[in-house]
Image (cartoon, rainbow, N blue to C red):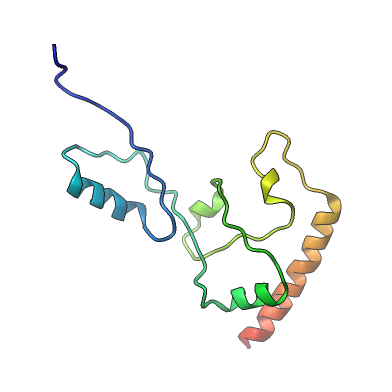
Amino acid sequence: MVPDRCTYTLDVRVTDAYKLEEVIEELRERLKAELVPRSLRLNSSKLPLSHPMHRALDLLRIEKYGSPTLSDQALIPFPSLKIGPGDSARSHTADEYIYLHEIEAGISRYIQLLDYYQRVRL
């Protein structure tokens, strides 16, 4: 006996090059199926390379992260990027932690970054 229907789940994750709605439309055009998204609220984010914040980060040698994990960044409706403090590899692990000296250094670096960025923007 052949079942009268088949159901399946597509796990679709996008980069900042696409919006989830665009991918759903592409899939609808190509698949003979009814697609019902569970959610369209978690999107990728990026800060355009032309943004002056990139220059400030580069000049201050502050590392930028492309996170392999999901974070609250997916919920903000404006361009963004990730920077420290701490080690990104420890994020979202069972024993996630950050050293006090990393927090102290992070505070200092954020102050430097904001001071520099303010001067660049004026």
